[in-house]
Amino acid sequence: MMMINRIYSCQRNTQRSMTWPKRIPIISWTSKLKPPVPKVITFDAYNTLYSTTLPVMEQYGLVGKKYGIEADPQQLTQNFVTVFKELKSQHPNYGKTTRISANDWWCLLIQGVFQPLSPPREMVDEILTRFEGSGAYEVLPDVKSFLQKVKSQYPDVIMGIVSNTDPVMYTLLKNIGLYEYFQGHIYLSYDLEVKKPGKEIFERALEDIVSKNPELKRISNLASRCWHIGDEEVNDMLAASNVGWNGILLDRVNKYGYLSESFDKVQRTEHHLSIDKIDGNSEEVYRQSISQTDIVQASERTFIASNFESLKRMLL
Image 1 (spheres, rainbow, N blue to C red):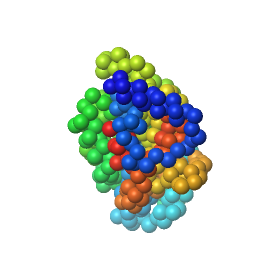
Image 2 (spheres, rainbow, N blue to C red):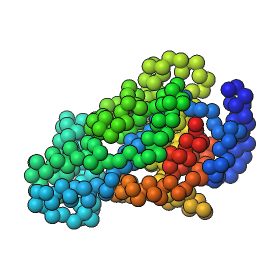
Image 3 (cartoon, one colour):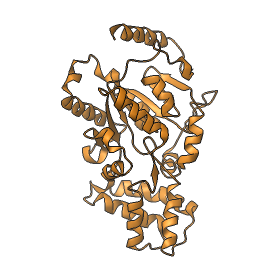
Image 4 (cartoon, rainbow, N blue to C red):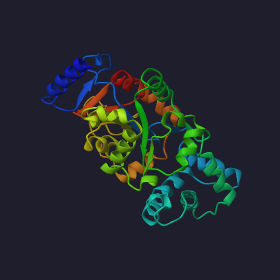
């Protein structure tokens, strides 16, 4: 292991003199290039571990039809961007700051999205229930394969979740069969009252992980053996790098442009990020992502990949 660490250290020293970004074909991830096996891997949740089977507003519309409410998904999408932004401002942290429940926060969002229509409470409740499980979400095959390989072949690797979300995630993870991989290591902005891209959420997550796994105290420069994977450049890849971890941007459809042949990086605004949250079709997303196998290294501690099969070759 010491020799592998030395090889990787030399490799990284060489990389410092290179110009970023750099494309690395999947076949290049041999033992000489691979980093040491991680000690900790954390994941963002939505659009990283699971994705919507259909765009969110299409699903809202399908439920609405059952209650006689006809709504244009495009109009619902436009409404969502405005309502989501307003609610984050009026009731931060999914309502915890202003002492309304996360469930009530989501009720307000659904009701606001359908304005000027007035959805009945039964319809709102059905939408909420739908988005607690496999009716709305799918775990893509490469995700399950990656998690299973870590659990079976690298049982000492701690896997966790670091996500800006609310406690409904605990129910969702159980319903879609992922909770067992992360039990005891789930760190939500709602619970901790700090969020990405701030450093504190990562620092507190690692502090808790080490307290539960004291053998990690013996690891020199533990942060360098920690990896975080998520679908947002700032909140995930750069946030992890800024705290001394390694950050991976999971960009399944090349939204940020790093995976294009010319590395044409695309600036994504808050509006784009809001649309990303509701515009996914898991089947189409997976089809696009699995065809791109290269990984792009953007800096010493930041990487971009389109799927977990490539990350499996890189990290495991």
